[in-house]
Image (cartoon, rainbow, N blue to C red):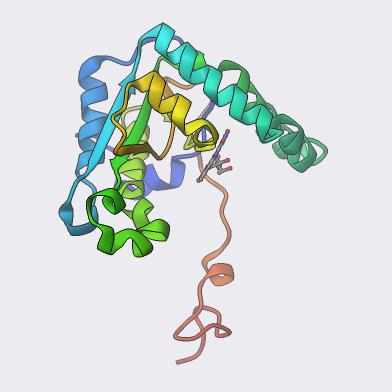
Length: 218
Ligand SMILES: Cc1cc2nc3c(=O)[nH]c(=O)nc-3n(C[C@H](O)[C@H](O)[C@H](O)COP(=O)(O)O)c2cc1C
């Protein structure tokens, strides 16, 4: 078990996109995935599957999908327009995002969290699950990201590959009933962990009804 406290882990888990080539040992990979499996899921169904991709040729194929999706989304242009002209921090983020597009295959480990579609199993849930299905996989994704931090590994949540979901499934050999929900490149980072910068609670929380910002009156 890590010596780090849970709040220290949460407050310093930031997006890290540059990795050393050192492989992530199998027992560490197992620990990350086990952390994912400790998460909640609807009805405790645990319909998840975690693809751990370490083979260089497979990483290259997955990286190709990510790059293609980034191109289709005009990602580098978008990011440079959003962050590139700003302050130093913004330019660092832009460079880091573009670096990942070009080098994602160099991450020694990629974890692709997948979910067996509840809609396909039970038509009663089809309508509801459209919007909420991710609630049964993203808690596991966050657990993996926090476990990465606790074990000294960097990662970043990405979802762009989903633009080419069929191709991704083909590469991974996934059965039809599974969908991919994220692509986590993982490795020992060359950049530092957090602290993360986020909005203040007073900006994002209201008490009882919208319009009464936290802490609000009682
Ligand atoms: C749904 C989602 C999709 C994301 N997609 C990407 C992505 O395609 N490429 C990338 O480099 N970062 C991606 N990110 C990472 C965010 O850019 C990052 O979490 C955010 O900027 C906060 O960064 P920080 O933790 O370093 O402050 C994504 C994050 C989320 C939650």
